[in-house]
Image (tube, rainbow, N blue to C red; front, side, top):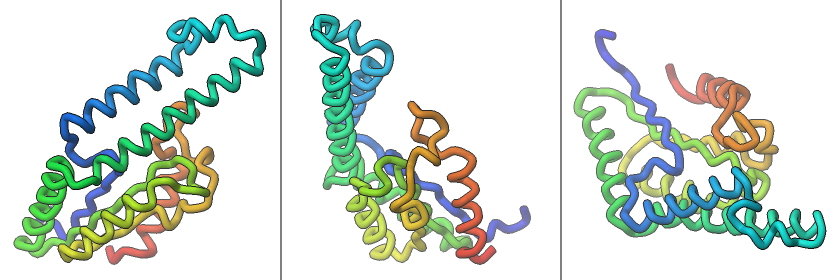
Length: 182
């Protein structure tokens, strides 16, 4: 390409640099989630002694809800006033300045987490990112607007992997094709 005209940085909510504390939270959540997915009963022996399948199911739901609460807290902690978020902001500003100096349009494109889209628990992070972008003159596109209220199950690669599948990417591509100047 003789001259790059546009840079679109696809940003996901787990992109910020992590402080030691945030990394420790992630490791705990990942370890706990990994244990849950392999064999809950192998790691929590009391479950094997539960008197009914209903209690086993309820216990599994309690563990799943705990993982969800802690994961949401982890995402929010990444955007708290900490060195990781400050460093991430600096890197985004530096990317934007680099592009401006070379007369390249820079866009911060934010993907949502495909989780509870009908009652999205991470909306405040999208607001934080939008405010940051506006304060720094960075063009901002939030993909949450095309997925909000929809059924996240339709967009998962796999029931254990919430990354966007081909349908999600198709909807993003169609949205960007109509909303961005190419």
